[in-house]
Image 1 (cartoon, rainbow, N blue to C red):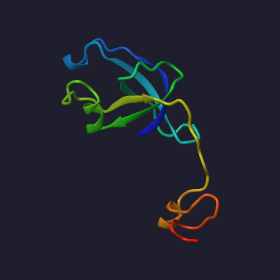
Image 2 (image 1 turned 120 degrees about the horizontal axis):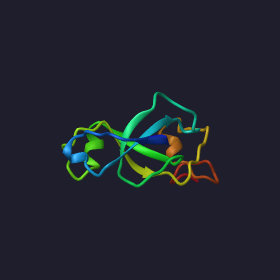
Image 3 (image 1 turned 30 degrees about the vertical axis):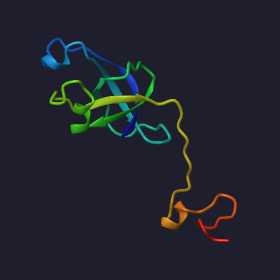
Image 4 (image 1 turned 120 degrees about the vertical axis):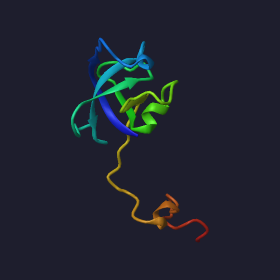
Length: 111
C-alpha cells in the first residue's frame, strides 16, 4: 500500500468496457509525512474518495484484484481513505526491539 492525495478527476470518453461506471481520480503520491513523492497518476476509485482526501492505493496485479473483474487492465486502484497518520522517527532496529516491554525496556520473559 502507498499513500496519495486526490488532486482531481479524470474523464475518459473511451475506455475498456469493464471500467464503465468506474470513477477515475488523479492522485499525487506522498510519503509518510505527506510530502509529494513522485509524479501524479490515474487510479480507479473503489472507495468513493474525493478531491483533497488522503488515500492509500495499490498498483499492478493488486489493483486489478480490487475490482469486480480481476482481469481489468488497470495500473492503480484506490483501496482506502486514510483517517489518521501517526509517524514515529524511531524505527525497529532489530528483532529484540519488537519484543521489548514498554515500561522496563526488557524483552518478554525477562525480569
